Length: 596
Image (cartoon, rainbow, N blue to C red; front, side):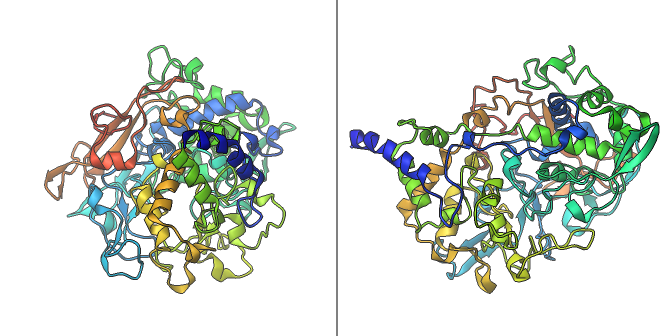
């Protein structure tokens, strides 16, 4: 049997690589064969792309960027590009009036969120339906007053939170209304965010592409400061990056502006209170000898990365900070490409890369009975990619061709998904049939998926096995046409599900698993729920008169990692739920306290 399997591998690999994934989808190859999208015309703004990556990595990991001086982009994207915290991670669906228990700690018994008497039959009696979202804890509900130069935290005041984020008058950190997707390989997505609101075109200040027609950039031309419009394609990561920085749920006090964020960060040492490894693959040469932060200033990093016309005058630094932020974080995230999984090696001809069970899963994943490749196509394993958009027969008016599908994860009324409007009043997608966008969400890529639980836009499944059960029963809420193409035709035996899970785990890149370059990073202190004076009674933070309505945070340490990575693998969400790895045999077990 073993000899037969080895002899079959080259034939299987050649067959899979030669075939489209179904429906005219992109040819399946190693991700190494797929070029990383780049914005045409970037050199108008950028003078040094390597310096741009340095700036972007510093911005992404710097806790000083949050209004509280403790919240970075990485606070929700620290773990394989995603978030696997357990406490104070629940929110109600965006369009729901449901309430949640503040500061709850998730347990294995909480999953799946919708529990059926028969997990193989979506018509069986419902034993539990919590109608909640496992999102990411962000910031407190506070109004912005002003920054204090050279001080990481900002002046502000607590505002009474909505009931879902407070208990007996003490407020918790707010939680996002969707699960956090990974930023790894997100550069291949035509649009970003679950609802696609981070548009392919970056216009310099907001996520919403051409809806924002303002002249968002200031330039020095012929001795004068002039306003300019910017329109960079292939830049949904820049569009995405500028969203959280001023978002009141995620990183900002309500009312903060880009010039104020610029004023604060320009007065601080980059990553000033965070350890940076001397052998960090990007930041190492800039690391301060003290071991904390960078020796270079943000102004120096900006001027090294951007053309003088946009950066080398005091007025430009504040006016163009959204441009600097978006393009540099995009450049950093574009380096986070995981293209060396065992599946990649198998498709490149390595005969020993996949086990017999993983090969079986690969075949089942590809065949019509599973329907997996309706949504997870090509080397990116998502139909939301540029490879899919550039294929012959792509229909720009069909959300499914852009990789957005109804998958019966939640009721259509809970979250409109792609069927929403942006703040400028424009629909997120101009569909020929608007009904096709209601409840449609971006199909995520599957690479490193074993490390990025919980799953789906609601975070309602804890394990890949639960995900496969969900698809085998053809979704949880199929009413009203809430099913993408093929989902109603899924036929998966228990053996099929086991094999597909084994295959999906083979999509993990060991560089991600062990945090090796380019997935190394500075240290981080992340909030992991709140202290309680008694069970169910939040302890108020009385140390600062500005914020007496806020609960005391609990903090967990994420150590700095250099280019060689860690000796232990990242913990999966299921392992965290069950306490596996808390002895130090897994990274990011969230049991080591820190003080931010």
